Image (tube, rainbow, N blue to C red; front, side, top):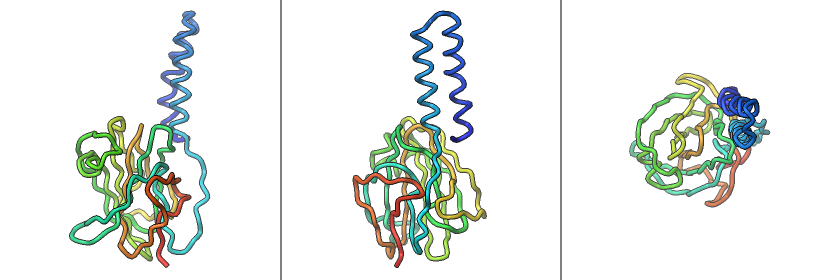
Length: 203
């Protein structure tokens, strides 16, 4: 459980207790359900990270929206987009082991995270990770309900593959920009799990 989840859940649970004291059983039931959902949203299960040489794991739970060619600072990349629904675990993890060389926040709009325009126009956090065998860019992108992007590391930090690095609250999108030599191992429509599913690999 992400610790801030207890804070968010305490408000509807306290309201439920007050409603019970006042005899408003229907309101108490609604508040208890809301508090339970908040705790469910902030869950943070342990994951077994694959110990496969050259593996790049998913940074997020969710559905693969698309895999397409992209460009980053004039260089060819392969972009994998993942949509995180309200019911997915929202803790993000590092796809590879390496050094964080850039963390850049970009203000923007709050379009529906599953739309292609969200990746270009929405508020996002752009993270560059330089690993021993490859480098990549991770983008945490806010959605129409996600109004809070959290990143728990900073430039210069070392991360392990599958290590927790942040989260996005209440529905969002994550994109990974890979070097073209990476062999993609997933397909559009597939459901992936952060730290566990191998998105791509280098032979």
